[in-house]
Length: 144
Image (tube, rainbow, N blue to C red; front, side):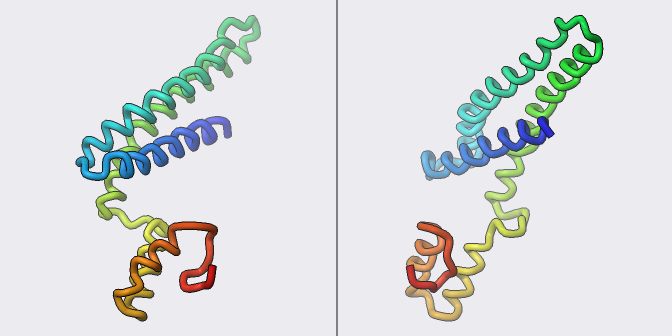
């Protein structure tokens, strides 16, 4: 369960930083945005992950063999979790960004806006998009 938490933390940081790269570098290529994401998220998650790994690996100094083995196992798990997430997740972000992979729920706002535009006409599309992406969650077309 600890590794799930460590891995989820790294995923959240990378996903948020990727989202920020779209706002900070709007006219840049995906490669440039990915470099920016690795630079910012990669460094911060590296520091936190290796600090966690070091705290587990410190158990290697224990005189109790089970504690040493646990520390070694968990320290290596932290490092492996970091490497797996850093290698696999950012390319997945690019695949999703290019819409070459459909992930259930990720394009829900877009689908709702397209359905409303088809029903009401194109003039309200921008208002619907603003309504769907700002403020507290509510149904499209519902009064604020």
